[in-house]
Amino acid sequence: MDKIAFPYRSSSHLILLHVIAESGSWEKHGLDVDYDRKIGSEDAQRGIESCDLEFCGGNHVSTYGLRARGSSWVYLGQTVNQVNHQLVVRPNSGINGIADIRGRKLGGAGSHPILNNWLYLKQRGLDQDRDDYELICQEEFKPGTMDEVESDKKPPPLWQWVRDGIVDAAFLGMPASLFAQAAGLKVIDVEPLPMIQFSSISTNLKFVQKHPDLVERFLKGMLEGIAFFKTNREKSIEIIQRRYTKSGQMNREQAVFTHQNLAQTLAPKLYPTMTAIANVYEEALRQDKDARNVNPMELWDMHHVRRLDDTGFIDNLYREKKADNRHLHKKTETKDAGGRITSSAAVGHTDCDDACAATH
Image (cartoon, rainbow, N blue to C red; front, top):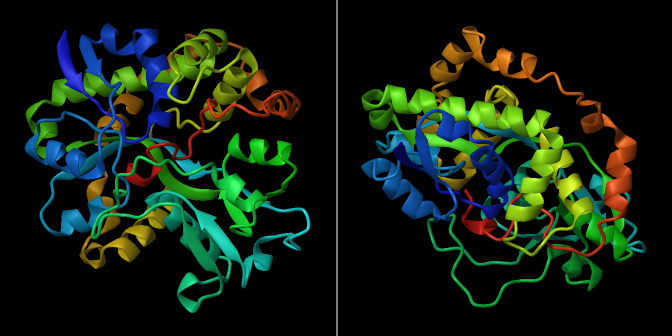
């Protein structure tokens, strides 16, 4: 077994990574992957640049400016390409859609989600730089970084700020929006935001050039693990319920919903979408002006995944496991599962969670 490091940037990644590990996908390819540990943005950057870390599950925004200053960071694949969120407001707020946020207070949490909010609203005619709305963030960040200032006090769920009138609105992903709805808040469906987020396959180009065999085996393990997640529903749910305990113990219904939510959004072939890259690059430009000296595609090296795809390796994973996936697309089941989730913070989702401010 070759030991490989793949620390996460947000514990929400463990929803997928626990399933990949227990599926035996990495072990099948001779890899012992150390994935169950959190790492900060700056530590991840140092580890990847020095090749002390083989892989990392981020970063997503800061890397473009770093590339302009000589970084060898590279992305080899992407698991999720959009942010699925809802607008949460008080029932008597008078807010019925995006346009009504003008002149209001918007709550935010986490460096990358705050950038997502900025971009999403700007693309719809509301500009934070023109003071079209007021952003109130739950954390402070270290100057010049996307890492939060460490604090012993953890802020409450963002929907509670809406409930208590601290802010007028917030963008929340499921299941947080379900908790908000259960508490009597109004939840408004809005379009998703194409975005690079969740687990990215990040590494150093020098490592890739020196260890192509390790890279191929690691990617095969990721691809097989994703296929397992999508096609082995019951076993994946069991693993999620048993292993994903960072925020508490999930019950069966919560684990079902968590699996269902992620299974529909995972990219089976690890290809990023162009709109997701374009949007994250817009955020990189806002965060670090040096990013303007970089073509966003410079950081993406997809020929390793492409080679596996061209051989039929990925398609064969799904041909060999022709499980009935119709349950992943039944809205009625999603609705029923969601209705049973009313109070637990243990339910995972693809948005940032406890490590949000240090996730990107």
